[in-house]
Image 1 (cartoon, rainbow, N blue to C red):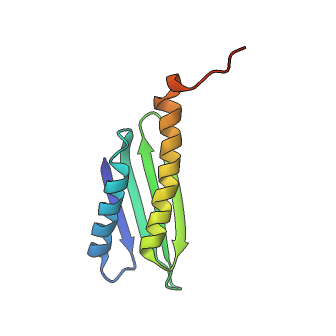
Image 2 (image 1 turned 120 degrees about the horizontal axis):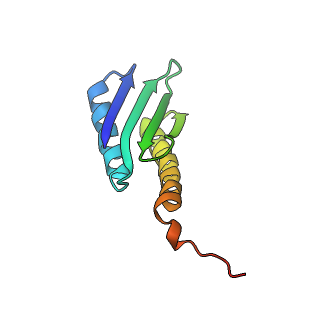
Length: 105
C-alpha cells in the first residue's frame, strides 16, 4: 500500500507523521485490495485536530472519512474505524459475493 501522510500546523510534524503511519499501516494492512492511502492531519486555529483519510481500492471508488476533535489520537482512531467499516462492506460486496445466502423461492 502506498501511503502519503500530510501534517499541517503541528509543532512536531515528524513524530505525528510516524504515529499516523504506524496506526494506519497496522489497521489497513489486512486489506489486500487497498492500493493507496492519503491521510491529512491539520491542527486548526481553535486547537482542535482535523484528520481526513482517503483510501484507493482496486476496482472501486475511493473510501473517505474525516473527523475533528481535541485529542489527535482519538480523532485518528475515529477516522480509521470509519474507513474500516467502509472497507469491510467493500470486501463483502466484492470478494465474498458467492457466500451470500439466497432465499429459496
